[in-house]
Image (cartoon, rainbow, N blue to C red; front, side):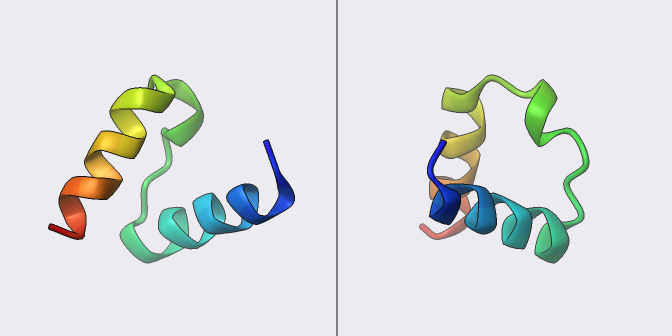
Length: 38
């Protein structure tokens, strides 16, 4: 993962208090991220 993506993930985790990002399938995680911005 690129550094920017890691920092973005950390930002999302802090903002939404998501503690299981690493345990979620990446596709499911990004689908949920996209849905938050729709």
